[in-house]
Image (cartoon, rainbow, N blue to C red; front, top):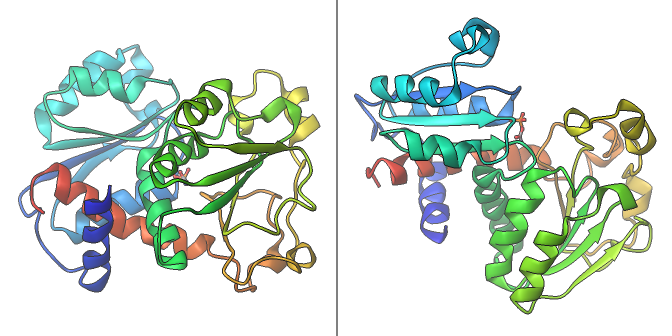
Length: 286
Ligand code: CP
């Protein structure tokens, strides 16, 4: 991870490096995406690779009933690497076992979003000057939010101190809390936002993941549970930065955008450099 962060910093300094000239990358998205797909595809283009793929399965043979196994086997025949987002948890690992080329997980259901975690780490390192001993407060949909699951596991390697703020329905799953306990890392859990932000270096906001709810009424109950406003940041530490994987809905008010705490748009920009580094690393061009 640290090697990829170092490479990302080099790509940020000098983005025009045609390390992947002649390579072809498949970008296959079975779920909607703006940042992840476009930053992966831009990263590939900047490195000189060509990109094929789809962002809507309606236009593919998946709509005729082709299985994931067959789709991946076919796509792997044509390309050097596959970037895949899919709604099923574990689908990326499965695809990597089927494919003859590397598969990068661009998000698998409510499970994991590892490339987002690498850009989150890069953003934390850039804004805090370190990764060790970060006090991070994760807020919102900690149950279905795959970004917090991956980030928790990564930050556990750097002695992070965690605070989880979520309504009872959307608490951090037990498996991730056990992951921390097994590693001797403490965490706090709260349901109120006010009064629980003052000691944070990083506020990691998340959207309530409407697409993961079986029952729309349950989503309606929690959809606007937290809404961060500028006035609520009065007691924040000067170094505190607000991260959000985006898209946001109502969880960060627009009046926060102009504060020095807001970092979510730069965070998304960092994704392009980190994804250039991931490609270069995975394809052995680093
Ligand atoms: N952060 C993220 O995964 O955003 P997209 O869904 O737009 O790719």
